[in-house]
Length: 79
Image (cartoon, rainbow, N blue to C red):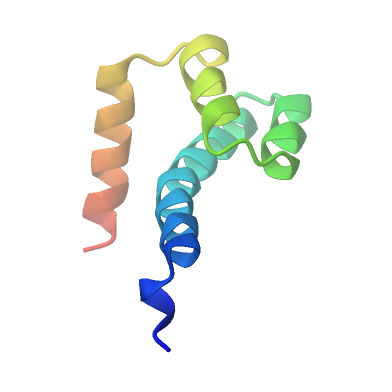
């Protein structure tokens, strides 16, 4: 039986691919801005990216342009 044909497995893979970049970026910003409580909360709580997106745009005050630029830099450094 192929694991990728199971709809639950596929859903988990999609959620992980959505959540991981947001979590890494939000935790990095919290560390950079010395927001220790946010850093811990972002590491521990798994909210499928909701808390991370809230932190990035409301607490760290990043604009969509800045987020796209930072994600682009991260993608370029992987090449």
